[in-house]
Image (cartoon, rainbow, N blue to C red):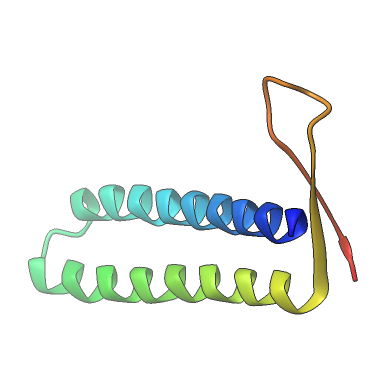
Length: 84
């Protein structure tokens, strides 16, 4: 049960980091791409790729890894990942 909670926490971290990455890329692109039509197509592709990356990482964790949280450091969360 605890491993499932740890895995879900790691999956949430992955989702947050990748989402923040593509949001920052889109912020820069909005300034760099002058045409609204071109930006809209670019944005759509970035969102699709980012969401696919999140899903792929989460599926990989579900299929091939056991995840356990190690509370050694109280100020940070440490998640240990290893092959099944």
